[in-house]
Image (cartoon, rainbow, N blue to C red; front, side):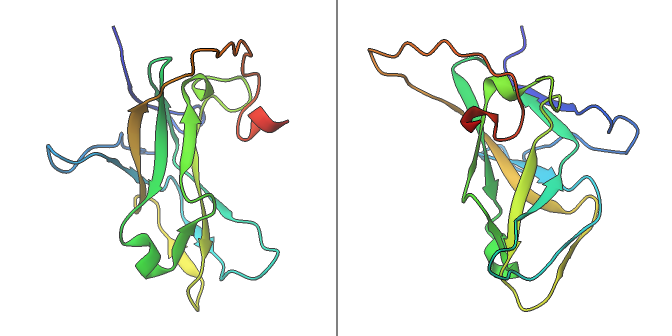
Length: 151
């Protein structure tokens, strides 16, 4: 039985994407690389965050989610995650809108455009369990991809 893991997202099968790994046995996070070269422009008011494709999707158990978190070196380079952390629910995997492909979204607060190269480590994924309240009765089913729960 599979519990949690990574797969290559549709459309990225032949693009040389590597599955994430932890660097040490006590690391909480799996290092995630950019799937393509991208330039992140310097932040200006009104600018949208830059989405960086990973070419990956991740699966986990129904009572789990995974967090997308910045690297500790990210802010030193001027990279700030637009949503501080990303929470990806288990039902995001394999959805019809985008196959479960997850992205990182960054603002660049440095004084120059930042060049991200394919294969650069841009963040980490950490898998977690979650708890629900005694009176929880959620029965909705995800029918969309990125940001779909607030549509």
